[in-house]
Length: 347
Image 1 (cartoon, rainbow, N blue to C red):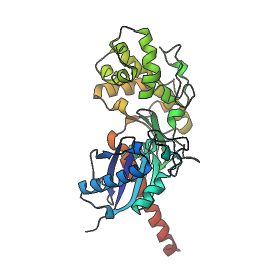
Image 2 (image 1 turned 90 degrees about the vertical axis):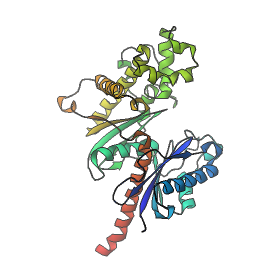
Image 3 (image 1 turned 180 degrees about the horizontal axis):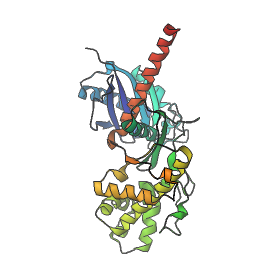
Image 4 (image 1 turned 180 degrees about the vertical axis):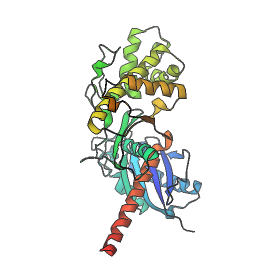
């Protein structure tokens, strides 16, 4: 029996994650299914890797590549809304041939199958939204995905806010009034984009490595992490915080309060139905996750009574969120094409 499915492809710097969505709305791969990306070897090698992994994933799901009627692809940015990577290079894609490369079109040409593109933050945000509200809801949500950087997305009436050039939902580069966060007097959180005070400069693994950990270690030179190389030390902060280390927990308090300031800004812009948090900061123990969410609320300025009840959710299926969101976008593409074909018959 022939299946009609869509694929979700979440391309990172070192690995590709896959899933498939069938016509009944069920994901055929529930867990993480990865394949090496080889993005450092350039576009041609990487595109072939994506397709090779997609065939393996289809076999794992009990399907065939010929069953796939559309593909959703997401990658880190910066890239245009149509999947053209930045001419100045793109995160995780260091090979010179990636500059200005149209990855969506290249994959579509190789597969001879329609491909739709999202950046990785928007894709994860899409899944977080649909997991809460379903695919037909008119709700609005704001998602912040904390990883090496800070990604995320704005979803309203089921659609990702992409923007004119594809930079919609670049939430990591929204500046926040960080001077209101207690305990960081004298810190100048400089972002990789060159500005000071971007959310990403305080709430990401890069923020820990470049800004927060060096700042706090200057005050606590006797801390065990002071003996480590800063990159190695930064990767240990969450584990130590989970176990109650005072300095490391203070770093996560600052991150949560930064997120609280950001969410407060978004509440006053969008009046959303939900706030959603994902990524490494909350892929942790239940107790630490609950403490972190509580700290986000504590970091918010006083609000109107009507705004205080807005829920903060944790994105489910964190490792697979990008691929799931990309698959949802592919399903939307299929529905829109079928609708446009039916329209003439109804006139």
